[in-house]
Length: 356
Image: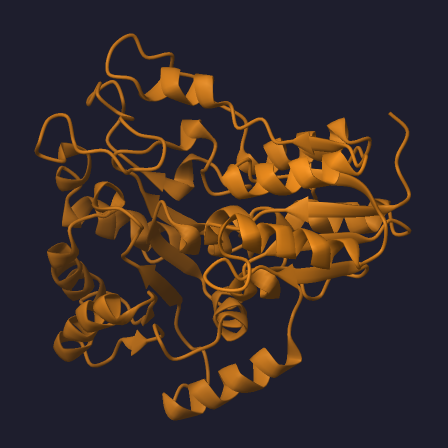
């Protein structure tokens, strides 16, 4: 298929990590095809991942109000038609909303390509019996393959960096002033203890003994990441026990958080959006995996086994039991997370920070 020189309409609405993983593909596209504009439809809070790329226009979808329901999607379709002519719809989401939009554009003669999420392969990987264990394509590669089928061959570059935002730098400098953090004489460690589902989170009550172990060693600065009121309350309990930690959750814009993440020496996290943001920023990651598994294609992009801490699948043969971590534990004990000790995690953290 010859590349189409009209506008590309790119659809990816959520979740945060999945949208962020599209960024290196969009960057590669803008570098190889600078004369082909992209309109990306996503949620407003994710626009920052793409705001610095040339020839990329962001349309912020409001699925809670203006673009809610079928009528809202028809309205969104009408708004998109008012932009430059669309030559191709690239559906990087493959859900009901993207399907409706594709169908509406098909009615006016606009072709589309859709991401292959490998649902059958993932089902075989996570089923209870007769699992088919193998490394599946990473989400970044699946996005790139989708563009390739649209006629736009590209190769996302490593290392990748989100484009800097000048306003974020000044916001972050003010935050450092408030925290009396004026220099960096010691390693900076980010800790993001949360994920969307319990089956992906190391027990929160173990973070206090973990911090006690880490602070008993060489000096380091710890930043706590999270989002939402409930998570901030939990993180505040850690700050009360360890006043030297710095609470990031709820303090910075997404752009400023990205600017801070770029300066970290390591990020301890779950299988989560913060894992993807850190890995994409070139920060050494130590990610904890429970019900899910990097083989499903969602591991820290560009990093190897050193970025993953998990109970091996040949020890816990039930792993992985879910692609997204949204299914109850078959055993009922979450051994995949509970069997990861504080000491084992502390040693791995020290290793990525070169403190061991």
